[in-house]
Amino acid sequence: MAAVKLLAQLEGILLDPVYTGKAMAGLIDGITQKRFKDEGPILFVHTGGAPALFAYHPHH
Image (cartoon, rainbow, N blue to C red; front, side, top):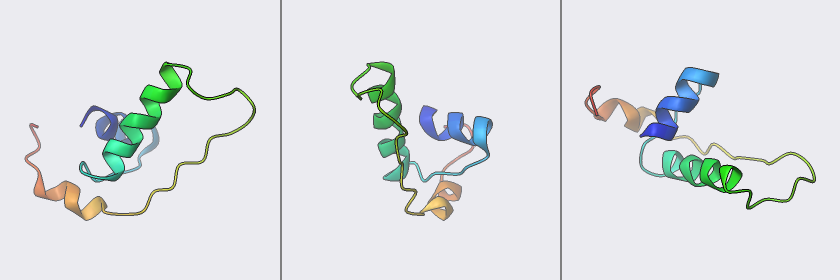
């Protein structure tokens, strides 16, 4: 959920905590671990699923 909260706070983009949120967490980890070449932009495809976010308790 940290990646979901981070993107919501910084960019105002809502991600579902199951699929897209985990994908974003992996992307953030890959960037911080320098797993990508510094040759250009990285494309992240948000496939939807934000309504699933509202099924979770706000304190999780």
